[in-house]
Length: 104
Image (cartoon, rainbow, N blue to C red; front, side, top):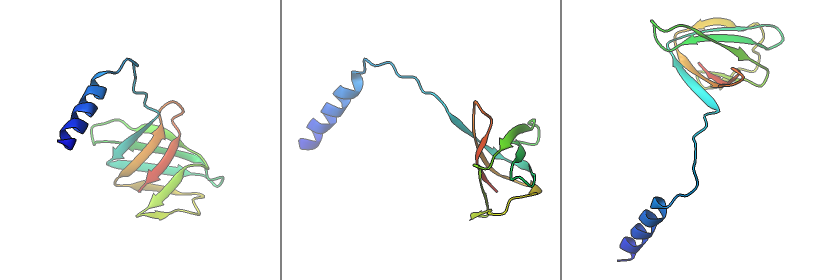
């Protein structure tokens, strides 16, 4: 009986929402099949990633704040990192196009 009252209360409260809410996406992610990374000696650069063979590449900026991991290990020395990867995940800010996290 206690569970039924709690469930009824939750259902009642869920039905009353006078506050309009809009979902705002700040970050997005690409589960990429093809990733090309180019980082210069300053530690900054770009990544080009695409989600499928027929998809076009998306170019995103890598900054010194970007966290890069390879096989779960953090890449500490990323200067002059240039490589083509068969897959990975790129998490980036939608507005700035800056990569937040790159998991290879």
